[in-house]
Length: 108
Image (cartoon, rainbow, N blue to C red):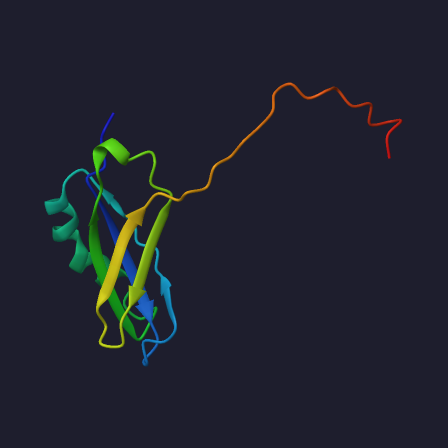
């Protein structure tokens, strides 16, 4: 099983940098950070024309938390700087396996 060491995040923005969105690239996860950095200019070339300004960043993935990350948090500044990180949300899901069976035909 291969581990992910880096995630390539590519963001496309309007001319004023006020309207930004994530852009899909052919490969976005890498086994090493060096591979991600090497692919970054090619990925930016792949999405050229999809936005007026394109910024990209390789985010380091902690192997111990690889399966726990569930959010990519990012912000593009007015100067085009990209601040981004991988995060783990504080959402807790609870369930009760001891639920009584319901007779859906007789309940409304």
